[in-house]
Image (cartoon, rainbow, N blue to C red; front, side, top):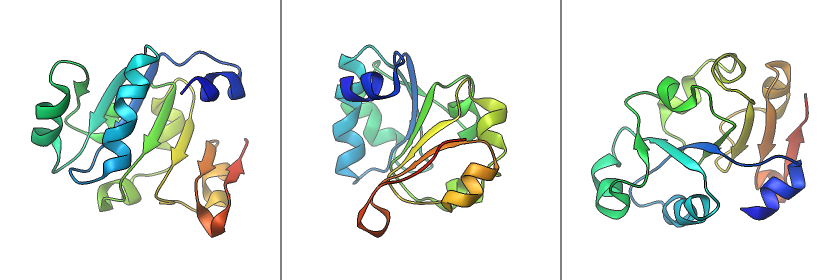
Length: 134
């Protein structure tokens, strides 16, 4: 994740993520985030028990999306649970220190994220990365 800090000219300290049990990219990214010194907070309505087996004591387990977003420097979305799709986009800038969202599941429209004041990285949409830099 060094590229992320260098590319955006800031230090990664707190990362929040949603983790799906069988989602290999999500589970694969946690070690990189931890290695870079991130404080990783996760929320998942189904996969917490599995995550505890893999990363017991290394991450903070949150009971709600809002808890996971509170004071975050960045948010990585690795799953498209309906709870994530339904969250009011205004919650990201309201709760986060820096509303920078890296969406690997394209849960939101780029224009809607931009209108909400989110620095939004829509990863993989239409074969390319789309960005909203509010």
